[in-house]
Image (cartoon, rainbow, N blue to C red):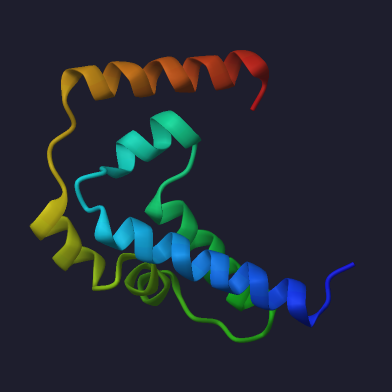
Length: 103
C-alpha cells in the first residue's frame, strides 16, 4: 500500500538519484545502459510519462532538463563523449542478451 510517507520517501530517493547522476557527469549514458539497462534519457521518458498519466503533461524536453539539471543540448555539449569501440561492443552484447531472453 502506498501512503504519503512512502511517496515522500520515494520522491526523496529519486531526488538523491538525480543529484548523484548530475554530480557524476563522467558517467556516460551508454555506461548506465550497459550496466543497468537504463540511462538519464530513460528517466526523463518515465518522468514525462508519469506526468502525462497524472494529467500534468510536462513534455520530454522539460523532463530531460529536470533529470540532467540543465537543457539536454547543453549537457551533451559539455559532457557527452563519443562512445568507445569497447562501449559499443558491450552495448551490442547487452542488447543481444536481452533479445535472447525475450526482453
